[in-house]
Amino acid sequence: AQSVTQLDSQVPVFEEAPVELRCNYSSSVSVYLFWYVQYPNQGLQLLLKYLSGSTLVKGINGFEAEFNKSQTSFHLRKPSVHISDTAEYFCAVSEKTSYDKVIFGPGTSLSVIP
Amino acid sequence: KAGVTQTPRYLIKTRGQQVTLSCSPISGHRSVSWYQQTPGQGLQFLFEYFSETQRNKGNFPGRFSGRQFSNSRSEMNVSTLELGDSALYLCASRRVLAGPDTQYFGPGTRLTVL
Image (cartoon, rainbow over all chains, first blue to last red; front, side, top):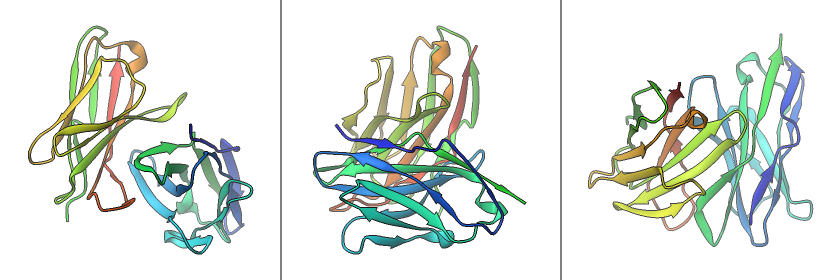
């Protein structure tokens, strides 16, 4: 069965500093990978997704993620964070054979410190 | 284009009661999925409806049920409420293409069980 691990439950970072949010997945088949962001009192919004092709994926708000098949990772990065990036970030995976079912990681709370 | 809407946004119930939550997908979207979000368990998949049929189901007891109407609107029902059912319930809609298309989330219904 597929699963998603987000090693850091909370990540504090100073404004304009770079950040990396880690995500590892477990699956016996090929997968699609996603990062979602949830701002306070809101639903989830898709940041970026990896379906196939280039392993470096660029998303909205200056975020990017790199798919590493050998390490089964899909870490999210941003070179310079802003106060408005303070939110909960979720990594998610779905198997290519049953992409309707998306499994989410536990989330990482990013706090940007002014 | 209007986003996914969920009603009500907040709900307070007592143990043993039942509750019905509503989700209106984005126009043209045919699939609706429901998730339960809690601080301890994170985002957990409840079920997905497509063309008025439940297509996928998560590991929740039979007290959790849902349905989808011909206009793709969906309702979720929880009977015999327990304290542990307190959560943010999110629904997500997608168009349903021949492949993994983006899920769009509503703002959620915050259910508190006393």
